[in-house]
Image 1 (cartoon, rainbow, N blue to C red):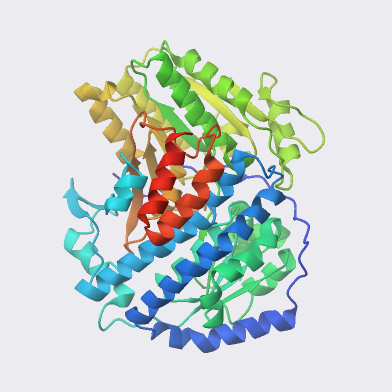
Image 2: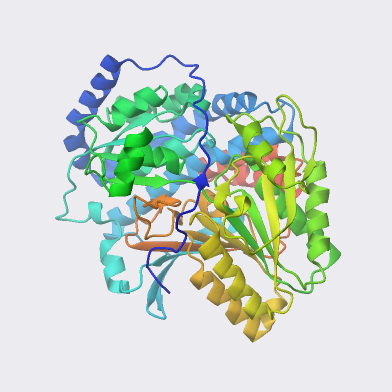
Length: 587
């Protein structure tokens, strides 16, 4: 294992995204200053708010977020062009308020544990081959009911002992530790509505900073709903929500009252913040001259790999994972930083083409989606013009971007567009590696490809049949691949977004990036047990769960699952859990 800077260097990264149209009136300079003045006044008092008061605040937030959820999700789905009667309306329940509710519930559990025992109480802390692994899921009955068969662990940086890890968990809540009062600017993402609120919660409850949350113009219409959900924080003066485009963002990132910045977005935006915009910024980057010496954390893009391990797959296995991989792309119309971008396969595997055919079959069934994110059609065009053999599924025309598969990439060119550039639309590719390799050799080559050739360090998926793992050499090779993949999250058998959605694991890029080669970012969020010195999270799930996962685009009851999932996470009600299970199983 290594903590060195990942060797993904000099890659193109994300493509510039056009400035979104600002539809909500921009917050005036006077109101921005007033918001920051209020936050500055509350920064010190917030660090003095005790555990009991914070737990009560989280209880109130669970209620207000659940109350705000119906209008929030309806507005989100409508803005994305999802028909009100479509099961896909559940997508914004699941990726929006439901995840915020889980975040709130897990924070409440952690703070309660600290209050009762003096420290967070994760399910396990072990040391394996000199590295601490902290088990974070399953942690209770609700985890086992909602995420049957799944587990998650957070791996810490090598050299950190189990005793040190335990001492540093939830450090801001330990006796004798005092955080410096600080105002954090959170630049919200425009694609997934839970990102901004959850990034704000991490600043508040994990880092003890009050927060100015600037909505992204793409989804700024959700600001009032998020404000209602987080109203207790707004009333307490520790959160303010503001609006505007690039000029407002630039004003805030240069403001003297801002002590720290967290951004979810593109590496280009990160570089503009750290080095400055335009040619002057490019020159400053070359010289390594940052604009301000303040903490800037970021979760940026990724060319997300899906590594397929050859095995004795049945036709049902192929159909399931064709749908699995297709759903990684179709979720949120492909506007996710962890959408499947490069399927990696063994050229000699007899089932390789069968899996691709299953992906194609699933994409043919996918409901056409509105390309609501700016520049989507231009980005799609650049890929299909580069790859004349690209296959697309669905109509192409004004206001439409079809889901697209680019099979048979040449694995050799180092500057291949699909390897170096995040499409950030419904495009993914496939590459097959040398037919002469054994499965362990193939996995070593796949890891090298991902670590050295694909841009980004955020998340990766490995899919492996349980029968394959009965071979000790393959089992060892898979574990070695998990160890060596230089990604902040590695997910076995499922959507890499599971690492984001489960909330208990850490979420962020693999450590070691530098400002002049930021890749997928720096720092973590979520991280429900408030761990320090994080290297990566590893999530494992069953090869074929007993029921269709609710995140599959073909789930027929996603719209019914979403509200019940939110209620179950907010209340733990047995009735809500029963209703959730009934609808989930009939998907």
